[in-house]
Amino acid sequence: MDELNRIKELKNKRNAIILAHNYQRSEVQDAADFVGDSFGLSKIATSSDAEVIVFCGVDFMAESAAVLNPEKTVLMPELSAQCPMAAMINPESLKLEKEKYPGAAVVCYVNTPAAIKAESDICCTSSNAIKVVESLEEKEIIFVPDRNLALYVASRTKKKIIPWNGYCPTHHLILPGDILLEKEEHPLAEVLVHPECKPEVTALADKVLSTEGMLRYAAASDTKEFIIGTEIGLLYRLGKENPSKTFIPATRYAICPNMKMNSLASIIRALEKNEHIIKIPETVRIKAKIALDKMLGVGRGD
Image (cartoon, rainbow, N blue to C red):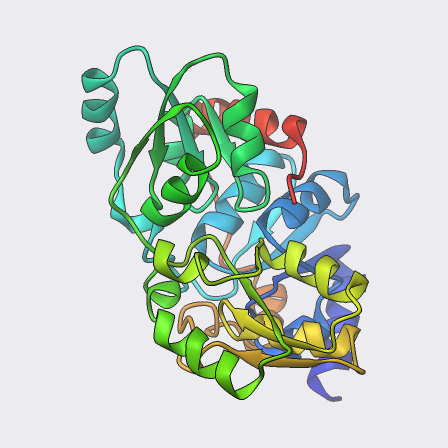
């Protein structure tokens, strides 16, 4: 029996659903029941009647699924698939920041541990960060942990944004020169860039969008060529859903090694051995769920 058939057999046996982020390996995306961004997968996790959720992404994604679905078993195939950006902030540091700005609301990017969500007023994703900030009454916003996303939001709101100094190492590999070189080679191409990129990169974009925003925009556009400024895993789905269009990575070095850890073999192992179960302490889970529920209530932005 090949790996895909074995996965199907195990899914049926365990009443399981497989969720995969847009940056996953192509074969993992093909094996998944749903492929999407953090916002879309969070919504699917809450609406599925599956008893087991296998989350192919990085740690904070599986944690969010566990926060939202305490009655379900959430499995993370590769425990070492950690998000470097999520590790750039801890609850103690955030508490100190909150003491410095007592009147500010805390918006945390969904790319954070559950313990950070528990210390925040509301979560956001790259697709709805501006919408989330605008939904709040407070005029000052502590925005954690992604400085680049915070600066992008700050350029599109009148509110005072206080950014944390975190970043995504993969998106930091995308440089203005990469965009300019590809634009020279493909002058008719539109440039779509993720807001985790540096401000000098987003300044060169035709559109700044989340991964799902890029997918929707590319499908609706009459343009035939696109330069894509995000982790290259997205290009697989872009090409699959738009076979008549061409997608060029801003740089082929924009690879998140942690996103690529999950494999068909590790999905099989997770379902066979019931590993690795993600559990969140109840005191943390309840507070984190409030922040995530508020995010889901605001809805998608792009």
